[in-house]
Image (cartoon, rainbow, N blue to C red; front, side, top):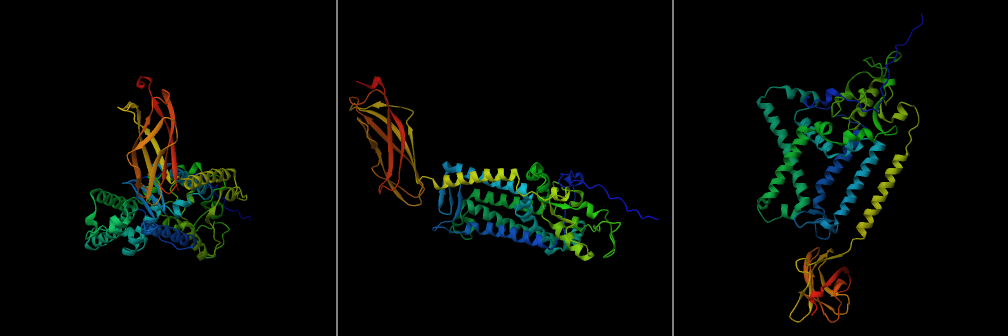
Length: 477
């Protein structure tokens, strides 16, 4: 009698974004993932908490006796490691945002949603807040029972303890954000006792708002933010290709799944023992065996959990692994270098070069001329024609400077300023009114081009701007 093997099911393409209707229900129960250890989870812990610690210490870094990074929206001035940026330098931040977006897109094409699994602030805070629940309540099963248990005194005490610790983390996050805007000196060293008594109304409003948002996102929204709100998970499917590295289940090797004894022959069954550990450890509660889904944040927890099970049952690792469609489905070697990668590298390189040139080419002195639009020209008692201007001068250095103003030589024209010398503090702007007088006997009616130069007293910096001197025919006697 010939023994026939049970035919295997057709394997769905792992790269396809499969609509997962049950998980898209916003009323689904809270996900309590089981915490697992392994190579990828160790990498996640290092990357996530290194980012979190870096964020928390960022406001305390000092540079030249000043907070190293300060986004002062009141003045407004942005200080970044000794460089000062003002509102007119916003184009530089536009380059920074474009570079960050292009870098994210390039990483997504190559490594999928690795940002979501290893570096996203939402992922970091959800992981931290869920660990608080584990410390107080226990592992996954205990947390699930806790949700269903009636409200006893013990449950209320644990509930208050959890939310209190969350509140401390949320408040620290809010203080860190605000310190990057108003500065640690104002926030903590304002002379008041305690320090928060010296805060203004807006500081309190933003402190409470950021605390509430952090508490809500990390404590309640959790996977809902990734599944229903974050747009990144929605447009990732159009960025993936056959060579994108994704977390995939090897359907051909794993099916048909089912329980069996350790080291049992796998002639009629696949390697998947249907232990559901990949589902239990998933922070969004999906089953990776159903194929790639928009809810998957590519944290690789299912990989570490499955590898651990494979070790216990004596099967090779890699039933769930990082792979590509080309390698898993077409059985071909992954093409690391593709035209899309080169296109992203080219655009990203161009943006970085442009941002570098902009940053290094920032003028230490900025000057603009505004002609008085109310009255373009007047004739004084002395018969001289007067044109009024306002010079917008910005000292963009980090030192006090003394400036002077001169009119580049034009026959018949002379300049008079309210101040012979104009001292400006570091990064201080000033609107200086000046007047240019013309001798009707030496200048022609019409528009005469002029150039006004502002320069430092020591001659180190200078800036010039052009305008016109207006002399109407009716002003000529």
